[in-house]
Length: 165
Image 1: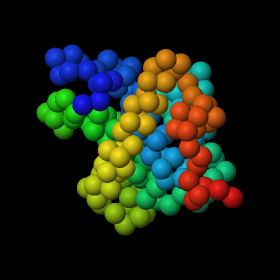
Image 2: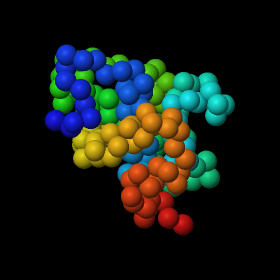
Image 3: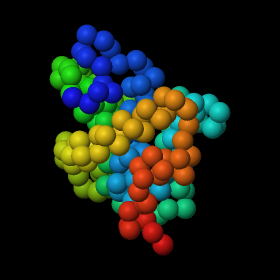
Image 4: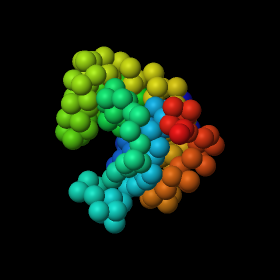
């Protein structure tokens, strides 16, 4: 079990759960080669209608509909994978935010992939990158907002070749 996760007798604080969620979006975006511009728990100061947000480079157009679907599904999947290390019942009952699920469904439809297939594809990515997800979540808990340079520094990795010009 990852030491950053608490035992099942203690619930995950909402701020940490949101940090894990946003970190999941960001880390999977990076894994898909999509440049992350901003990850924040304080989206109100960044003119968003959501309480937290992960933003991507708007000029980047190489991402496929499946990439976008996996990124949309990654937040809740990161929560599920992290929580399942100590409580599978709670993990299986985490419900995705309606906006994430609706966005994922739209992109999955464009990709010709079912919701179940999308969830099946994103889970191994999140599981393989869980340590990075938790590292990013820890940083978000400490500083609330990560810009692109801070995010990449945490990952200690450049973007994948797919996103290079």
